[in-house]
Image 1 (spheres, rainbow, N blue to C red):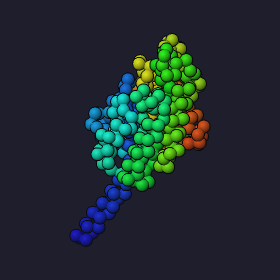
Image 2 (tube, helix red, strand yellow):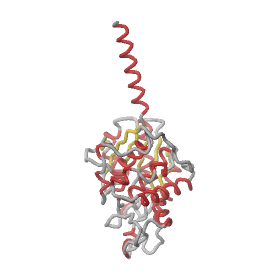
Image 3 (cartoon, rainbow, N blue to C red):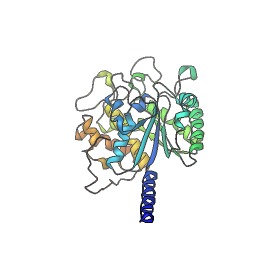
Image 4 (cartoon, rainbow, N blue to C red):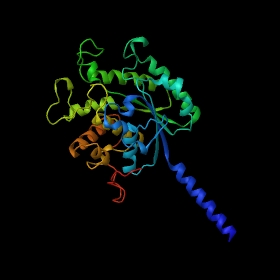
Length: 312
């Protein structure tokens, strides 16, 4: 009898361990563009993710977590964020908590302008390339097989439509493309980078699709959404939702349209089914343009999808 009990206990431990290791750990390293400043996204479902700084942040990581749960993926999601910070801040101050475990995937980005005036000219990628390289080397020491994703951010309306700003008077897509060019340079220098999350370009696609307004300074056109927050700098719930969709598609290889018009986080944030559908389409269009996902919505059993949001 004792032998039988020991066998059962051993099997329980084995299956428990298998379940634990089946989970994929992903860490988000960033700033206010990751944690959702300026919108209800900031504290959205904070209990579903682990904020390594204990600030109670949900943000884009919590949206990503929600998407993975609804489509049957098994992720443990963590974040380490600091407002107004580039990757050098995390390198200088946060390696002790980043080193808590070997991460399977890491999503990270630097400043929305790549650099500051004291770091040469705005838009200069040198700082990003240097700090992303150093952070990647550190992450590889924790896990030689870590997959790193760099997030290229959006065109800032405040730097385009106001006078005497770095991108004043340029087309709405130019800043996003300039930022992307900087991330391309970083990716080319870092073999561990698996892909770039082209969030800025997905924002532009939402404008091309006609769902998003292009200039919040002259009012929001009827029937369109504003991807920016009231400061015309950070994202709105719509902007961060699109951000999370791109990350979700890139990391899982899943068509974001699989989430469907009844996707629960969009509903909880007050979006209409049409808005949810169109944002999913914008993310899909960008991801397929870079061959990151195939046009094949995931079909899951009724017991799994659609699945309402539940408390974690």
